Structure formats: structure tokens, C-alpha cells
Length: 173
Image 1 (tube, rainbow, N blue to C red):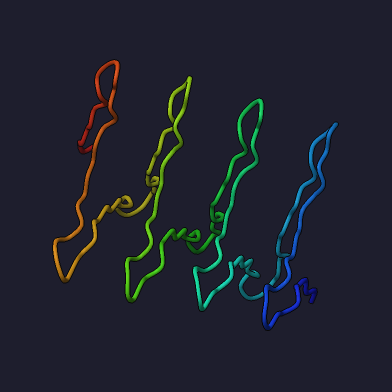
Image 2: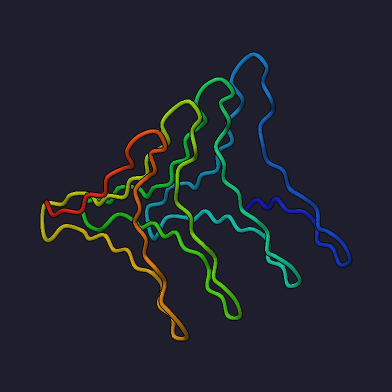
């Protein structure tokens, strides 16, 4: 195995590890690729990215950001599981904040950015179609509380400051 690691420290910060490609002025910047090889038995190898734990302050942040396009679009971030084989199901995606023992648990935000001079981006949540059994469901639940009022669930259309606000349509197929 190959190990790339900074040394440990007993009374200060441990060292940093930087992995990246160089800057290019007349062409495309280089690619950084991290991948796991394939195997013929057992489960596939995992890729784990963990930020640092702290016993005295906030844990380390983990940031995933696409590249800026100074004159056109910024890059795409794609998070998906691979297709399933002949027998089995495709993997699942879990986006969740951690639990908390003595305070509030973390928040989860899903949204598009604001736009100046164009339309704001769309947020779409949909379930794929199937050829057997019932269609997959979509469940939206607000939080339960054992001490006070449960969490609110709010659905609101967008404001139209120069025209009509957006519609809300709830219907069965």
C-alpha cells in the first residue's frame, strides 16, 4: 500500500498534505483523479474522505466545489451511484446531518443560487419509473419533538416583485 501522510504533533498543528495539478496559462489545467481498481470477488474498494475530528473545538470542514468559469458556466458536480447489474439494486445516496446529544443537530440545505440578469436555477426532486410493483414514493416530514411543538412544514411559491407570484399545484397523475 501507499501512504501519503503528514507527521503528528504533540503541541501544535500537524502538517498539511496538498494534492493538485498546476496552473495553465495557454491550455486546460490538469486533472486530479482518485479511483479504486476493480476486483473479481467481494465488494468493491471504498473511497473515504474525512475531515478532522477535534476534542476542543469545531471539527474540520469538508468542501467540494466545482471550478469557476470566469467567462462562461462554472463546472458541474455530479454525485451518483452506479447502475445495478442483472441482479440487485443500485446504491443509495444519503444526505444527512449528524445527530446531537446536547444541542441542535445540523441543518441540511438544498437550493439553487440567485441570478442577476437571468432566471434562477430550478430544484427538482423526482422518482424514476419502474416496470414492476408500485412506483417509488416521495416523503417530506418535519421534525418530531418530545418537549414542545413539532417542526413546521412550509411550501411557498416564489414572489414576483414585478408580476404574479408563482403557482402551487398539487394533483394526482
